[in-house]
Length: 335
Image (cartoon, rainbow, N blue to C red; front, side, top):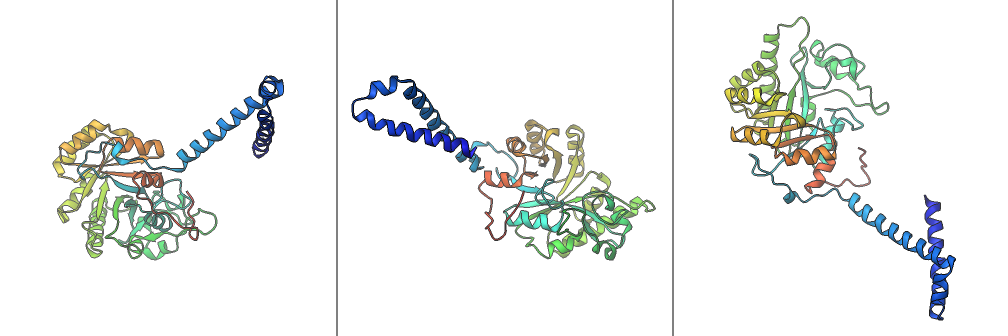
């Protein structure tokens, strides 16, 4: 490509040199000659290509889109909460719900994130997305099979170098300002095989509500689950908690959210329409959209007027609303 442009630039200079002859009255002779025609066409083409390149560069270098172009009507006064998905998203170099991914998100201006929460055998909350530990770490079994001491030794298998480690929810909260961000606890109810599931859910609900109260997060967090019995337990323990039903069928789940008086529905981007979101709002239920994988999905999600978006392309989303905090060269980011 570099050789191509060098050749074209040389061609342009040759034609510019020939232009000197135009001043001497040889215009018609040069233009009518085969060489003149060739050089003229090439020069026009390269000038057009250069102009196109500049325009393309300027358009691609800016991810900003004026929010006023979107007619956002939601229960947040027209503001959409811009959340990461487990931090920087599923394609980031560090695992979802790892400290490295979450810290980067908040440093870049992310307003919140969902975090995958599981309960250890001794009722401590740990951040981990898959069901089995061997899927992403050197440990095996379920989080609920392991004590906090055992989980502290957990290391993610990827990235190959500079491995991230398993962290407790407390480890994260101790290192961020919970008044600056919103946290969605995505509760993974993976009980040990020999556990009484009802007792397990009771212990999980108790551990989570105590954690939220201890850390002063009651007004700065959401809780989502697909288990209505678990959500009912939480509701009974603290009616003021902002609970979301993890939904895969809007028509059946909105009445459930109404019956339980939940804060809202958390659903995949393609599982609801803009009209569905509007209906949820008419019922007083907020809507979080996830499975927002790319830039096109970001735009589609915005146009549905949700209250919150959990995006795997969070940098693009932040830039669209001019909320991205640029990172200096001393702390480079990769996504």
